[in-house]
Image 1 (cartoon, rainbow, N blue to C red):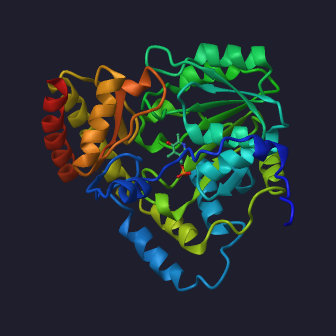
Image 2: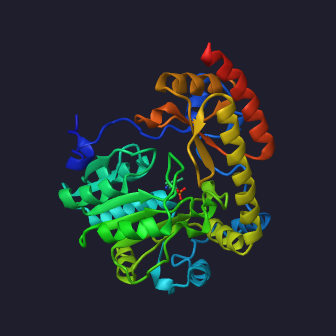
Image 3: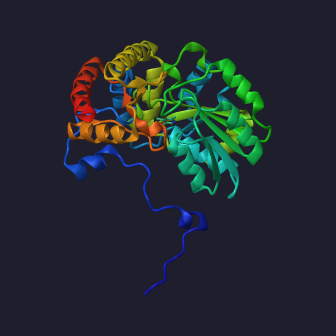
Amino acid sequence: MAGKPPFADIVAGLPASVPFVPPEETERRTGVTINLRLGANESTFGMSPRAWEAMQNAASESHLYGDAHCCELRTELARLHDVKPEHLIFGSGIDELLGLIARAYLNPGDAVTTSLGGYPTFNYHVEGYGGILHKVPYRNGKNDLERLASTAEKTGSKIVYLANPDNPTGTWFTAEELQAFRSRIPDRCLLVLDEAYIEFAPAETGPPIDPEDPGIIRTRTFSKAHGMAGARIGYALAHRDTAAAFEKIRNHFGINRMAQAGALASLKDPGFVRKVVQSVAEGRREYAKLAEELGFSAYPSATNFVAIDVGSAERAAFLRDALWQRGVFVRVPGVPPLNRCLRVSVGTPDERKAFARILRETAEKAMK
Ligand SMILES: *Cc1c(COP(=O)(O)O)cnc(C)c1O
């Protein structure tokens, strides 16, 4: 029998478990069909009809590779963000870009700082490139900026990660608070500012974009407010030298024509995203009221989801499973104290009504 070719050391050392179990897999396993898919912060508002039309047209050109430079989309985004086109990096979603960031900056053994219970895909990639994670607990329900900065300093971290607005809490910091944070991060440490939910946040949430700052990469996506999660397209804003380095490692044809055409058309239909954002803001208020009515409390949110603290991890797990049995998919974050929360995406008004009804009935049982 032939010997087994050995894996690379880092890969051989990684845990075998798959950290991201899709709801489809749980559906297959449990035999339950999901009617209310509110666990992955996808937009149930869908995408702009103009994006849909552009994608249908582009589908007929799918025998061709996409434009590796994403030229049209790049030009439009550069205009919108008032930067030069060479400050943009494209990827098949932020998730891919986070992997490229880890690859671009980390040698095996390098330190990285993030929040304990923060966005797990970043951690997944850091570990995949041999980085060592230092995790700072949340403080009063928010990322602890002070300790993130001091931990980055103490550990000599190469990267510090912050999602603003945050997942899974939904909380956010103002531009001013972020600028103070930025100034406390050591020179040789990169700040990854993940702005997946920025469209849902108050106007003063993102600090001005400084394209000349080599110490920061900001990531954006079409998955959330634009409703194009399945199309897989996102981008980063960075210093031109940073962007140039990514040209050496990125998957040049990784973004298909449909995604590029859809993203461009969606940018040209800002009224659609504005309406989604408005309805989501309404939905957040409804969820907060619902939580209060049930004796729970909701984290303040500037995203398209609300984390509802139901009082204990046991109750959160019970409610998650009971909701699943009734065809409702929500998630519970894995780490205390966030594991006391149901994280619920804000759906359309009809979905919100259905969710409220089912949660009320389910909660009654949980409280007995
Ligand atoms: C949803 C989410 C992403 C994933 O974005 P994609 O562009 O779909 O890969 C990244 N970061 C955070 C914080 C998210 O919640």
